[in-house]
Image (cartoon, rainbow, N blue to C red; front, top):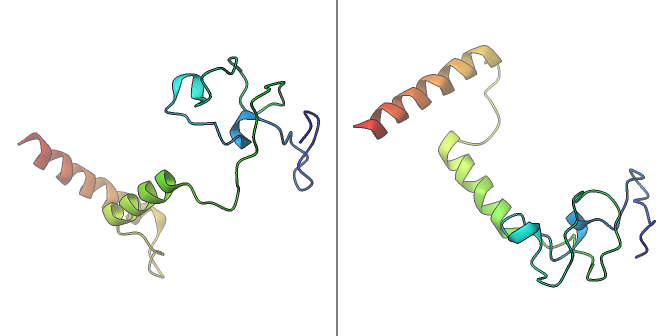
Length: 105
C-alpha cells in the first residue's frame, strides 16, 4: 500500500496509523512498534516504514468487550415503541443518580 493510496469509498488516505496493525491507543505514542518514529496526525498519510495494514475482518476484542459491558449496564437493545427521547434521558439520569448514591455509601 502506497503513501498516496486512498479509500475507494470515502477518498480518505488509506495508509494511516489508524489502519496499521501496530496502532494501539494504550501504547506509548499510540504505536506498539518500538522503533517507529512519532507521527502526530494518526489519520493522515505518512512515511512510516513499519506500516502493516490491519486485518479489517478481525474484530477488535477490546471494543467488543466494552460494547457488551455497556449493553449489560444500560440494558442494550432497541427502545420500546412510543417512548420519547426526553423520558429516556430522564430515566437514564435517575438510574445514574441512584447508582452514584449507592457508590458513595
